[in-house]
Length: 109
Image (cartoon, rainbow, N blue to C red; front, side):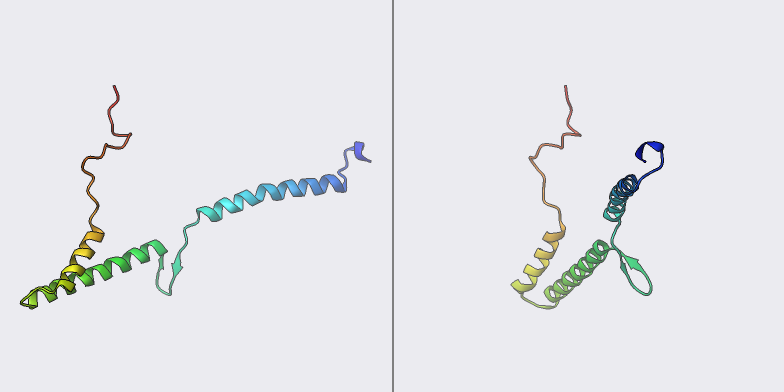
């Protein structure tokens, strides 16, 4: 009987559904906050770190190669000048002259 304090099948089902609803957000937040990693036999690395490392190595190779070719050739070849300036331009930050400072550093009166 519903009024005698003994749980019925409906209350058990409702309780289990409520428990499942509470578990799902917890699982989703744990997975959403997890940082993906690439695993190897010797190390673990995040994809962002691996991408950045490859970009640095490739850029360093291009800069050294272009500089070497510009030094050993009598007349500078526009190809190597373009490679060098483009690679350096990618890594240098853009100038921020004339822009207002961020709101957190501006002074208020």
